[in-house]
Image (cartoon, rainbow, N blue to C red):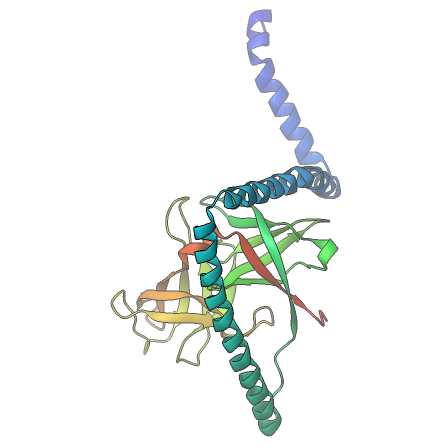
Length: 276
């Protein structure tokens, strides 16, 4: 090969050698290298998150006194509403405990809520995930469910020393058992193929033929509690379309997920009190 042509092909040959070398490297070395890189990168990501919080703080300091007084009044109204909701929740919890004792029903698994700040979003057509500012230092484990005020966010897929990665329910790799509100037969939910700027959505399978839903008459989809990961009754989204499957035995459909999934700043991780 002439020297000139060899110099032109050198970058490609180097790339091929690197790819081949990476393919023959043991899986343990690859895993260790990836984990080490993420741990080294974590302080930068966390520091940027704290910097954004500080920027937001000083932005709020620039508001006038009248705006702060009005915000304080709104906060007082919300506090009063939440205090009433807490009282109602206490009453309902006592009633649930009484019925469980009366009917000899097993109690739901107990969880410890761990609130975490979102430091990074990674959305593409292949995966939908978040990085939160808590990890092993707060007892978070792989598989822990993650929720917010609108329902299910996803589940923890990777945990590091000070951060954790959350797979959103819009991720095509997420599957879980669900049920349409008012129905009893569990169905399969899976994240859909979502474009970067589109509203998040998912798909459902094995829907009974007796179920009907459309954009004009949507149905609410909630977790079934099967599988032991998510407690039952948590909102997943709204079923806006169902149609017969190819086999004619069931239906399949589309689920419109909460649009706030792509703009979340804080989430709640449900850490099991009894992981076993």
